[in-house]
Length: 137
Image (tube, rainbow, N blue to C red; front, side, top):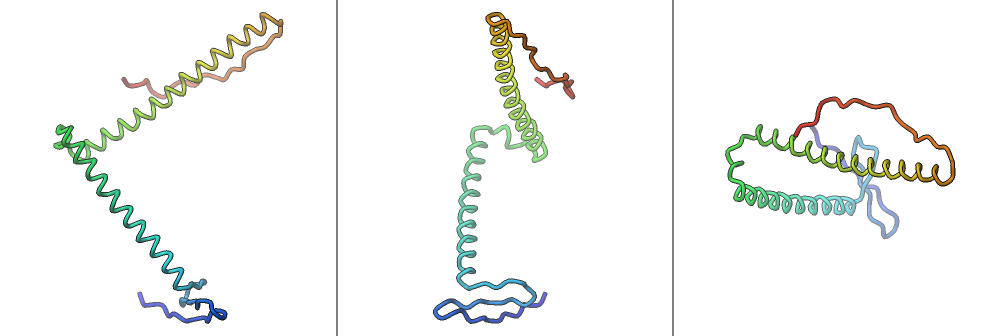
């Protein structure tokens, strides 16, 4: 790929010049390049630190769980998939338990309202949806 051609557009008095790039519909200032490169360098530094941190975590995990050292990436991936799915299932089960407790509370409250006031109220219902598969242990 050939290098683009750059041309300068003079900035107003005391202002920075603009750079035009051939074949591109925009112009920029060198200060824009500085800002973007600074952001990239900051991101690079953060990524290097995160890589080092994750390496340290992995070392710690292996030291405390030597059984996983001999597992293949495929086996580790399967364990990860299962565990992340289990975490999601547990979160939804917790939400379901809380929701069912609230429904039970509403049911009791409506029954008490009816007993005390005589107001007839039928609790709304939704059609049952059968689970796709039975839950794993």
